[in-house]
Length: 346
Ligand code: AMP
Ligand code: MG
Image (tube, rainbow, N blue to C red; front, side, top):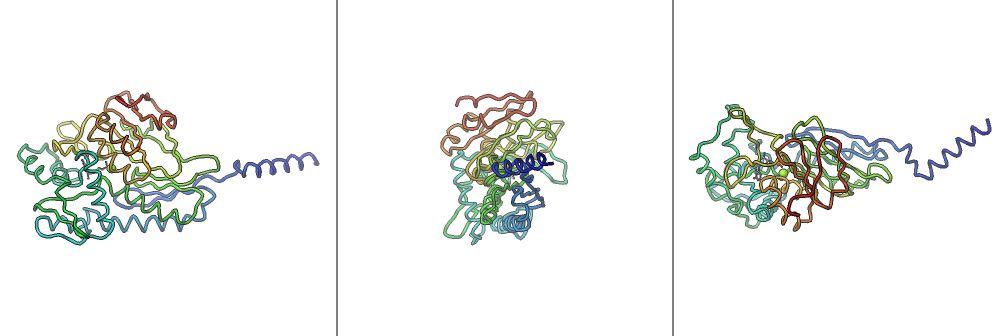
């Protein structure tokens, strides 16, 4: 009897020494729909009771930005700006204006590979439309390409103006990352031990899920999206975004055409299956994952060096190869069939 008590006492003592790490509850997750995709908030187990507040804060931000920026909502500020193309400037709400400014910056940084005015060309490919998709004619492509150009967007004071009728802004390549950053700021004010926000694959973390442990995310297999290729360990504060044609595509004559368009050709970008970018904030990660998907690994090198972002490129051929930047090589653990190698030219 006595020995049992002392064993129990010793166990309690050891647990307390270790910060009760053995008995720390698992992280908890709640999901909801926003910005046309699945959003989720995950909290360290210790913070589980704060979930209602954390979820409410994140949802409020994401829903507000969706109402402001969605091109699927006729009454959003971005839809109104698009309707005023070629007519007059429009005073923009603060977040839309900020995001238009940031989009111009990333347009410049990627030499126009990331271009939020690519919408008129994207529509030609009829992603998610009722009409059967078809390869656009050269005439259509040439005409619509004439409406594309991030540098044409005029930003003056609080106003934005699209100078040509038919021009269109589509923030689909950057708005989710921006929304994650704003939601992250709001949830951070709760002073939690650790949390993770995910909006359709745009992730940002804070703190830790458990004492002595960091957050990690899974790298999905772009050739079989029900499986994973690896696990990436993240540092507190890091953000991750992935772009891939498998996320949204049309099939024409048995061939897949993905939703990320190369603004130079008007055709879907080819050569890669997926690009993951790891950065200090989710806006950069989102914009760069889309832009670098278009540019490919070689042209991406100077941009990654300049922004100090890390990346994983998966070329469009099986078996899967993961080309990674040196800063994250040690943080990546393979979990599926695939090989890891350095980014060519680094
Ligand atoms: P993401 O999933 O972040 O890579 O964003 C893809 C979305 O961005 C597409 O569905 C389009 O709405 C839009 N998009 C497509 N091509 C481009 C591009 N070259 N630059 C910026 N946005 C793009
Ligand atoms: Mg993106």
